[in-house]
Length: 426
Ligand code: S3P
Image (cartoon, rainbow, N blue to C red; front, side, top):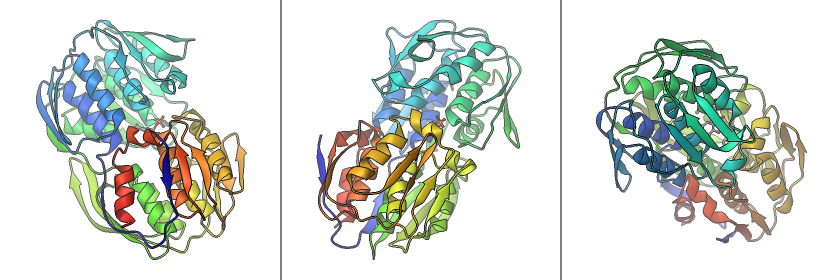
């Protein structure tokens, strides 16, 4: 699908309802499948990725009923049934990496496959710890999907992750559910902690300290009724869109504000964005609030070190903020961007260049100059949801229409994106 976005002719305004958080939806679905009994999940992500997870857990014996944004899952406990066919994770790195933790504990062989993009993404990062725990994993060329996992009895390990990755941390913690004893994961920089929060909600026992988390194996998980907060990473597109269009005022309702994700708000404030948290409440261990964002006078910024890990999913759209800012944006220490759904250093830079911006790339990041006048162009998402939506936001500040090829990719995390954008434009 080719989507044309015309420049904004006036302020954005109104209120936005976001899809359920993608990270939290995956975790709730997998844990519900591992808790014996009926769990109900409200505001489950409408994105294709989270529906890949639902199809996988169904193939592993959970019963899944979907009614709009509400999902009911009857879980089997920790013992799942062998799937009759390959498990298809689609485009979803979270599905393949986190589900592998559960499959490592099952006494059967399963095979996880994915689409063309997922089939190029590295899996050694989960294969190494799962093999140490006692599972047998075979991947294409030793590192890419499809992955075949033969699980069984697992031993607890202490694992120091070489890269900061919440998917790897989660995979090892989920495998730790099946080990007799205490499994510990150490992380080199803080990553999102939705798995730790969700595991406690479902009744697992965890210990946490600076840079580590430990899980006690073989718990009896409890089914739960939960509500997923709005996705802050999806909100990022509207936070930036409102910030770069003068006079805008947009409210985002019920957004997840977990501190390990809300670094985004701190960063936006540091760039000069006028964003306010209107209220905040705790729901299932996760903070949730409404945000108000206005058209803003933007300074420049730097994303490096721990900030790079914390903002990794938002960097494509933050590059648009950088181009519209006074001094631009420098991104360093973000080599992980190269192994996302696309090489996001290249796809972000290539599209911004097509739009007329000055961008310099490095192995671990890029620099985008400020005060860029963007112009009409034909750009390409390359099948990456966050690149499609970042291009649409950039188009608001271009001097002519921007045509986005492969725009349908947005539905991987935010199928309602195009309608929501039309709505805030009036
Ligand atoms: C995610 C973790 C991050 C992030 C991804 C979702 C998660 O990936 O980029 O979109 O839900 O745990 P990594 O763990 O590879 O950093």
